Structure formats: structure tokens, C-alpha cells
Length: 234
Image (cartoon, rainbow, N blue to C red; front, side, top):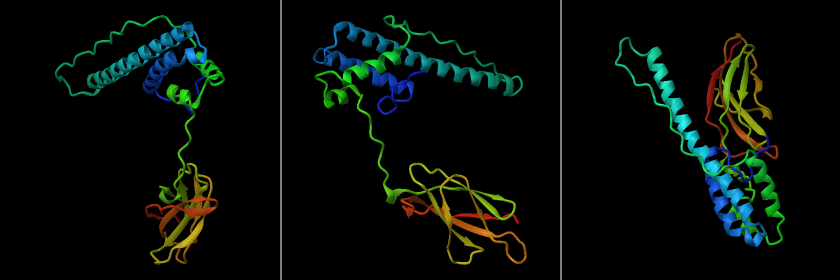
């Protein structure tokens, strides 16, 4: 199913409705200079009316579903002989706007492609219409901070799960048995990673403090994670 690019088209239906309203308004203004006729403007306006209607109905459906779930829970799990709860009334949908054929997204993708190659099209037009691809937010190395999750596995193994995001991985340091000395334990480029703690002479569990930093260009950057403490399983 074709969906317009996330680089310029929002993800949620409510955000798409807001975007579509602006697009329809701006397209009606810019259409003559971009060599689009009144019929094409009307098609966009009809598609916009449908998107607005769907977004409004979606809110009603979601609210009704929440009310029905609460009603069902009260009826099934509520206290015995509790006061009766009212059955939620089904929503009354608003009257749809002008007719619009299926395939709104396909038409939108094709129209945006045509707008971008129009002779008089400019970047300012694209900004007004909301069709300029957004640039991904740049990483700020000094502000990066991982939040690993640790799990103890048999054999003195510590599993380290983390979200890599746009970095290369994490650099891990450990302090074993409160020694007071932090040691480099390795670099992990995929999550989860596994770290094996050497067994002590009495084969007992070991106390491990662990901290990590993100990797960029294979070098640690940013802030250390919060120190996590875990006991190994021999």
C-alpha cells in the first residue's frame, strides 16, 4: 500500500489531517502559478474533506472503544452487585463531505511529484505546501547517553541490551567486587552483547558495576550511562 514519504508526511492520522488542511489551502493559492487548473484544486479539496472526516471519526471510534472496554471490565471484574453502569452509546458520525474516490495517498504522491517538476515551482512553494523533506536531527555527541539493561546469565555472563540509535554501539567499563578500579571491558556493536566475568578462586557470585558510553567513529563519546550494579551467576 503506497504511503507518502515520512520525510515530509506525518505518521499519525490527526497530524496527517492537520498537514492535509494546510496543503489544500496552500495548493488552492499556488495552483494557478504552478499551472494546475480548478478541477485539480477541487480534487484536493475533496480529498482533504475526506481526510478531515476520517480523522474526526477515528477520534469517536477510539473514545467509544475506551468506553466499551471500561464497561466490559466493570461488568466482568467489578464488585458483586455494584451499582449498574451505563452502556456507552455508539457514536453518531458526522455527515461526510463531498465524495472522494479511494486512493487518496496515490493521488497525493503523484500530485507532489508533478508539483516538484512544475516550471515555476520554488523551495518557498514547497515549504508552504509542506513537501520539503525534513533533515534528520544531527547527533550532538556531547549529549549522548546510553541506558543499557543488564541481565545475569549462568556462567558469569552479563547480557547487555542497549539502543544503538544512530551511533555505532557502546563502549563498556566495569568495576568488579568494589575494587575501586574501572576496567575497559569491550566495545559492543550489536544488542544484546555478552560480557563474561572471570570466575574468582572460591567460585562465588561477583558484584559488577557497569557503565557505558556511545561509540562514534569507533571512539567513546558523550556522557557515561548511570552506573548499574549486578551480581553474576557462577
